[in-house]
Length: 291
Image: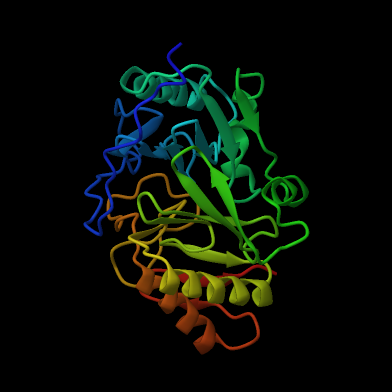
């Protein structure tokens, strides 16, 4: 048996240095590049950051594969359902196979969770349904919140135990009623989905969003957050200037990673915008109320 006598996790990378990744950001209109449909970056030997190619879907969401001693979790599955155009399961299976080669064990599980329920984060779910030792949790509020324990305690912090690596999950509605943020003590990453990222922060519930940002600021004050990682890049490097919706080539992207201070900046922007929904452009994001 391989699985019951496994070496403990090692190789932790916990620092505030820039990620140093040049992300695939699409191709010029007349360009034809051999870029893969999914870009995968190993942050450390147990943490993979992934991005969908903008040439397949302009949203180009980021998603995250985190390995523990007992199981891995995949947070979000991308914006395209077709395994031919967007083979997200094939990529994830290969990454898990690579990890298991270095860290052998039997019956290694995969848990699929989500940052929220919007289509550009759940489209690949179907590729994982029916996969052995895999649990795909629905992204809708009822399914996700029930699984994580928010149904009765919406402002609690709930554990996601991967084995020697325990994520902390928070219900963070505002952008979407089902939105969830994950803090990973292993890396210090705060995975904020579409709640905070370098782009248009679409707010469906202004009051809930303000409460969510307050809770994230409080978490960052209590926990050691190295980077705030969202699920998109929509800004240019020109402060306050975003790429238009539908852009498939973004050669002037800023980095994915933000710092805890950006949470304070969102809080300050909300205060400046006032109690009623209002569009407000900041250096690294734009508050964007949705009617």
